[in-house]
Image (cartoon, rainbow, N blue to C red):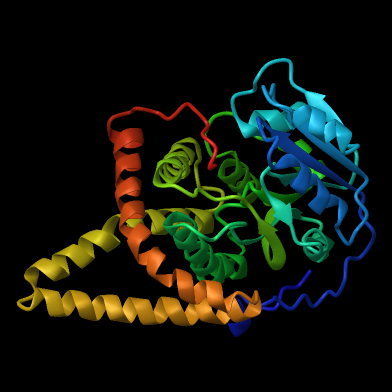
Amino acid sequence: MKIDVNWRRLFGLKPKILAGPPCRQYTITVVIPAYNEERNISDTIDSIRSQSVYIDEIIVVDDCSTDRTGEIALEKGVRVVRTHQNQGTKAMAQNYVINDIHTDLMVSIDADTILHKKAIENTLPYFNDPLTAAVCGFVIPQRIETLWERGRFIEYILGLTIFKSAQNSAGTILVCSGCFAVFSTKHIQKMGGFQPRTMGEDMDLTWDFLLNGFRIYYAPNALCYPLDPPTFAIFKKQVNRWYRSFFQNISVHSFRKNKKLGTFVYGYLLDSFFSPLLALSIYLVTSDMLYTLGGFLMIEIFLVAIVCLITGFRIRMVGKVISSLWAYFIIKPVNYYMFLKAMWKEWIAKERLMVWEKGH
């Protein structure tokens, strides 16, 4: 499959797939790992049932929930597999059934995520490429009300529109997001499924695929809607796991087989580490510090606003973009602090994160 690489990607617009529609009809199984998700599991199942393509089977992996997650899933008429004991991570819960899947594709979706009706359909053309291992989509929070939800919404728009689109053009997606991803069943089974060695199973598997010659794509028109942290306490736990799993994954992977991936990974690492230090140094050495800081901030606000408004028009959420921009600039320094703290914990203090914490 040939992907058109042009200015459209810079703004996260729908990529032009020159090979046309899916080359054939695919059989599809959806796997939903779930632990104590009685409030969300019904809506997730309904969104899968409403897909524009036929779904052969829906499997809920009930990871020893103590609420009615499994009962509700059974009432919805899907297959429920209850683990013999809690698996500890979403990765292991998914692995519980991965070798029993015999369809062409396996869709992995969080139990608190709902899908646009064409989300799965819009990933299928990418599988015209026989080396495609996985395709991820565009993420929009279900609720955009609190400071943390609004800041995350702008983070998603900015990251997906600029950075993930650039990674897509370069053929080096850094993470196939775990909230919603479509996998080639034979490729994921060949890789042995998800690994338990880090707290970021989605990033771990993405890097394994790329290091073994497979391809990952990002489909900006495949929309999914997870629940994101509404409070600082939950936001902190989720970001801590994301950042610490990033450092864990660097520690367990070698990039000799894919130097492009290594360049992106270490480029992101260096940028995240030095950008705030550079901004601070400019602030400290400038005679008119307040004026300089204000100038840099105004330039950043303008650039972020332009990019997010363009994407906001595409996803028909301009109003939410305008009302949420302010939140991004509040959570940004929090993210910087959490990143540096995660690096200290994982690489210097050697206090490895061992507990998988959910983001709601």
